[in-house]
Length: 100
Image (cartoon, rainbow, N blue to C red; front, side, top):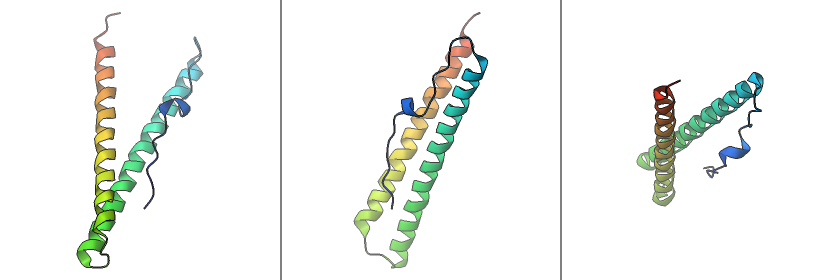
């Protein structure tokens, strides 16, 4: 199994320059790529946990400890992804309520 690394979002996103439309588009693409990567990593952790459980139940593995660790890593990463989603939706709703 692979170790999950938590990288800061600051290193993955570019800061938009004031008044430039292309920089804002680049930042949006960077954030979109960050989200795609996060979803992909969570999906990979869930697949690894499923494989570990399947191997344990089929008798191909006796390693309950690592199976439980894989399950917890998948669960924690999914909960983190859901919290990020909730914050993004909340920010979107706040922006949409702003009066111009």
